[in-house]
Image (cartoon, rainbow, N blue to C red; front, side, top):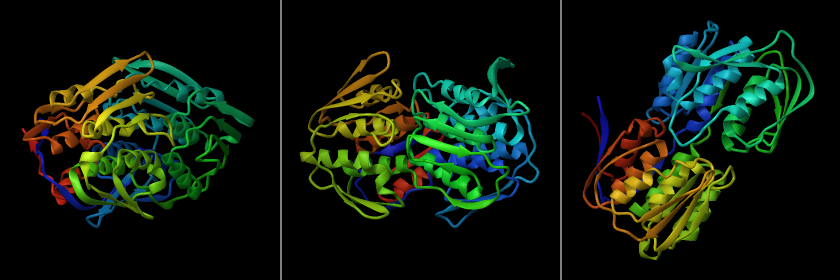
Length: 435
């Protein structure tokens, strides 16, 4: 059954909304739970499709999953006493990209992992070669094979691996590779240094969980992480960090569509690359310890900017498409350079169909969008090509004249918790239709 959003544009939004736990963090946290046979309690997980699919995979392995909610905060209790090794040669692992964290966690827990290659949004080439390179440098055996016409990976731990000041160097500070190598090394017999690691807050969140469980990991948030192997991990309680990408999405929407919106449950330091750009555009913000207020004052004076995506703490690629929608509503010529995923400009075709004036220039490893503003957006029927493109089109539909339909919203539901209720609670007119 097809689903789409029906959105009536032009509604001013005002009020307060609370951000959920970070999607890009919680998936790794949930997979890390298999490293202990004791109970893990994870609070503030987002109720999104990726999490639901991950719960089913954990149950397939033998995890006992219990969820609770108070209407605002979701909590999961995971008991892995009965977990057993099974090859993950099942279709569900291909539905979201973060399933690749099972490689690191399972080779740590069971000494082996067989996994169909993961899926997720298509954003251009997204190889896992850095993950596999790290596994090989640790000493794991890596083999590609075909399982019922699907590409698959087999990771095996030799009977003895002893490392003494072993170093793994990442050619690029990949978040996924950094997390996966950490997961694979927590039980290693020796010490490993990972250099040129990603610094994203989600990595710090994973390491915080693992250290609370009894791991010995230092350097999270820097470009070098040191892991000294331990024999076992215990259960613990952990609260997921707020989702900085969800927060950034709503901040940009509020900058154009509201007179005043308060975004609660945020860590402002995680959003500085965005809030500095919003201030440069001319958006009025009040930044407090755990919330940010957006004042949509005189929107006629918002000015064009240039941004360039990069690894943390640079401007995040996950917010680029949503910023592109915002820039259609400012005065002048803005430039957006994408250096991480060159196919993140497919939403611009849909935005142009709604009245935007965006020109795309592509090179082999980078892409650039030139946004000529300010343009009046008009309602249309559009299709989301990926998760963040989906929110950028929801944003566009909310500020367009007339009633729009946004299709392929399965992408959006993968990453935005309770999006319809959150938007309607602050004055939007959005309806989820099942056709």
